[in-house]
Image (cartoon, rainbow, N blue to C red; front, top):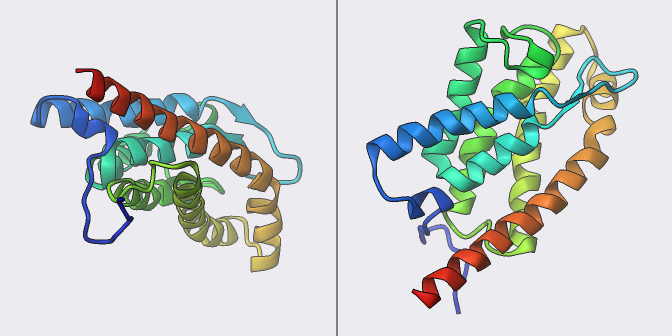
Length: 196
């Protein structure tokens, strides 16, 4: 019987791909690219300066699949390239300004945290995956809401009402999908390993 411990390091999905440096560079670039692609799925949220996008889901999945170092690096690459002017933030925007920029900064920390938890088995069962994704979302909010307060001159209550509440149902749906997707992927990987 295996338990989730802080000392136990398990492989993440990226560790199953052979190679080292070239693999890692490719996966980091692909993770950043996937997040940029997911950011183009934009659903305006009435009354909020922050739109709903697929980038949060992508950032958390990238973190879980790549592990803390590659996941954090992929999100840092996503942030830096977008800050430098590549239009791959929500809706084809770029630059680290505006109401959404804090959430993007939060992706870096969330990708690393989710990756660290996945490296300790936090993506192997639906319940663990859900907990891992909830923690990742909380980190994104912890960085995004104060930024929103500063960028839009809001108090905490208003920022919470406009930058958290409208997104809870969407985030819950994303967590449900991840809680099914990641454990199923691991089940398939383990089945394949047993057959070979």
